Image (cartoon, rainbow, N blue to C red; front, side, top):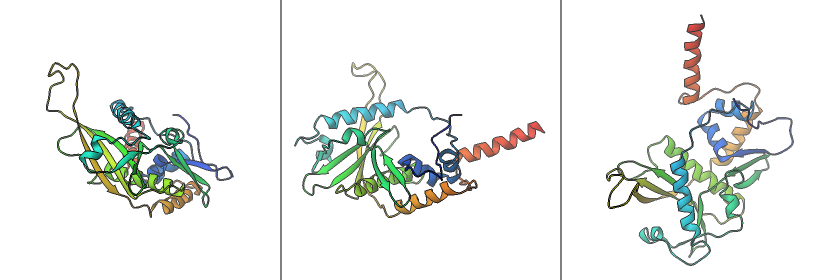
Length: 253
């Protein structure tokens, strides 16, 4: 098992904590502590390469009109007056290993995250965080229903908090741009070989960032503790290892 960069309570250097790390703390403090304090990284997930591909296509699409007055069919369809925001740090903001960063001085934790895109309202000049999502399901995509959807909302809100703390005129309104793969057609049709059709849905979300700073304080307290925190009842990793330990103990005995 790989060892991750871990938190040292005696260090005076800022501790880098990604948006994903803060979400991990909310999902399960025990897993968070084991990885960020003890250096025990969780098993890696299989890369979602199709989602990576659609992200790249969307970024290429909006990069093609970034810094211009050109409109986009998505904005026209949903009645938005936007442009693709041009900034010298855009490539950093979208890089998973750099992202946009802000030092939370009271905890000495540097919070960072990589956004998919930023749009600017051409009238108010406010910035709007945009998150690309890929799926393939019947009906319209939704950010309701709890579970991963709540995590998507928190993701948006953390980005909004970071941009605001970094001095940008950020709107609390963000957008989830969903591409939804159709399952109704064949893979070979209309003389096209290997073609998949996607429907596009834009979901507006008004974020609430008042919880973010307190969560950073709570995460710092967790990292400073000398004992393992409790796990969350709905943590899949903890449930798996608990049941595995029970089974292995039965066989070992």
